[in-house]
Length: 133
Image 1 (cartoon, rainbow, N blue to C red):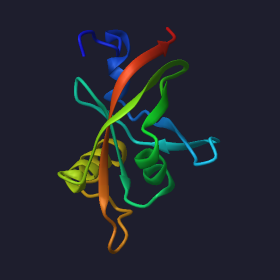
Image 2: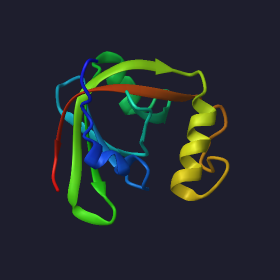
Image 3: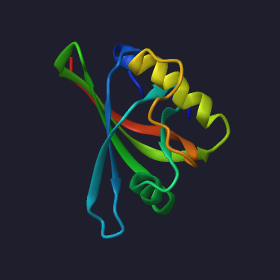
Image 4: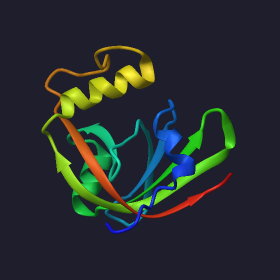
């Protein structure tokens, strides 16, 4: 990617406990929206899920996504990111969900892990953003 898509003015949202609402597409074409914890590595917007969940199934079929992140300190300030899945990986996914649990819950380990659950990291390449304030 030649240009920065995420504006500097909104990078702080990825440091806060700001939930993103992730929109994916169901097989019928209907949107499906789920709140997710998010991270940003300077190139990709990252989120973590369990393999087999609806968003995981949707994204394996169609990698187009939209995320809306609202500033928890000012609900009138937000960032919308539209893009495509660039990578889906199991590598480091357990450590990533633990890091997100630390950020969002203040806990060293993700407390909602289910027996046999396989975690997945999704990396989204931002293509377009809209933001306020």
